[in-house]
Image (cartoon, rainbow, N blue to C red; front, side, top):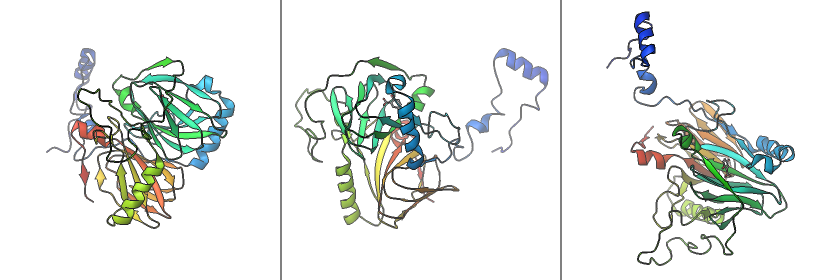
Length: 345
Ligand code: GTQ
């Protein structure tokens, strides 16, 4: 196994010129860039976006830019490894903090990437997905799967803020990202399916022969249930932190094709050192505070903060008080591609 491969410089200039003219390049000088030994070489660096810094900027965006001129009033969380303006927090995950003011609406559109929202602040906001009105309460996970029409509205009287997570970078990379626009949707006059068809875990509407199965049967996961589930697991589980995956209630699969969502609960003072994972992740703090070390970067996080971790990073979390986080990750994508991996430390 050769460590040192041949360089471009050691090739004669006339040969290099002839290759350029023919539209080809030698692989060997570039080989290790794309196939490094043993583990990937990520560009992504750990990011930390404190809510106390983002909130005033968002509120100011509300004064400076009417929603009509923004379509979506969002501040994008840029990966420090790629620099400000990067439309991604990790290689595959885009995250942005969105503001909607009382009475505002964000028009309907549908796009190829899938999105999910974690509600950060405020009451009265909602998203309509294919006619289903999904109320947004703090900590709720609300899905807007790829290809489904969605618009946002706000019936309350304080600003509503949520974190968007999209698999947009993948679709941009694939040259598959685009959107269609439309008018606001008519809303069906009934509660969302988390309040009707999937009110309780383990129960689903009776399966009828030849019934058309919805690919995304449940698009809102109320935080109150997530927190209750975590608390029971923490109480009766082992010493590890309590974690629950958000799953499709009909199939048990991940809720979206490429992005996974895992809620985590730490008791006060509890720490966790997960295995090195091939997945990248963005963590959103629903409640609580603590510290996370990602390779050599120490992040001190508080309520509503967001931070990110690159692939195969060495992570240690420690909560200073009881804490709840939601981890957005690309494990579903990597499992579909057949390379998801965990390495013990
Ligand atoms: O709310 O539909 O942060 O389409 C980026 C793209 C939010 C949205 C984003 C979007 C949306």
